Length: 142
Image (cartoon, rainbow, N blue to C red):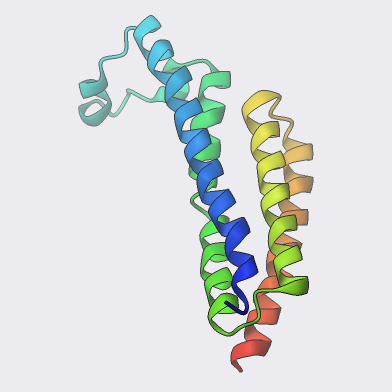
């Protein structure tokens, strides 16, 4: 199918999101047990906040999981537009891989050492790749 190469990085990023999901719960559930957190209180007690109750290193995974549902959703939509218009191969597929690679590195930084300046640089770089994809999608549909 012409333009479908960009769908490969889409699938990889979706799979990576599930890796972070597993990692998040593999660390969060034992931490909640150790901290004796009552899961029901999280829904009813406004003072019950996992960011205050669990170690930061545990919460970094949860924060990254949330981040993987923010800007990447724009990538998913734009990649589909590029694939449908037959523009998802070549340079756009390469940019898709750049975007996904940068997001994976961003995740690894956030869930391990969580250096904000490094995360920010990776976020900006991935956003530039995404902006280029958005521009190419706009050129394809307008």
